[in-house]
Figure 1 (cartoon, rainbow, N blue to C red):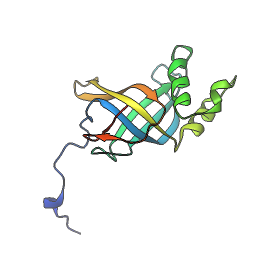
Figure 2: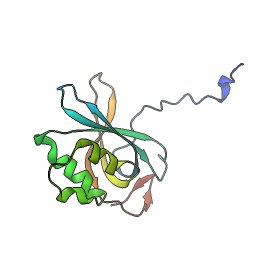
Figure 3: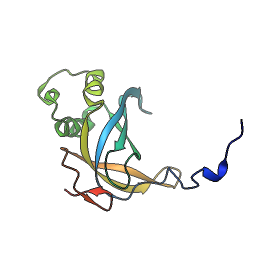
Length: 138
């Protein structure tokens, strides 16, 4: 079978989306292990509206005491009752996140290889997708 490469998009689909606030759906929330051997939830966030709809941003939630603020903020953003729980397991958090929608403030930094990459600066409760140039007004 032959392929028509003239139809192929030559753009860089791995280029970061512009820094702004976006409305996302959490497509994946998978348990894994960090480089420091801590349990971690690997997130795949899909932009739900605007010019960048369908683009993916990745984030990691390391399940460690010094990172509880970030875990609590994403759970608050999706309206989860887990924020009032004690002794919550990582799998429970991952299950609560999958398929939920929320807003997130995205920034750009240099990755370990020197290429620009997106970072999640803050998780926010979802807002109605009022658009300006493909992003969410908050």
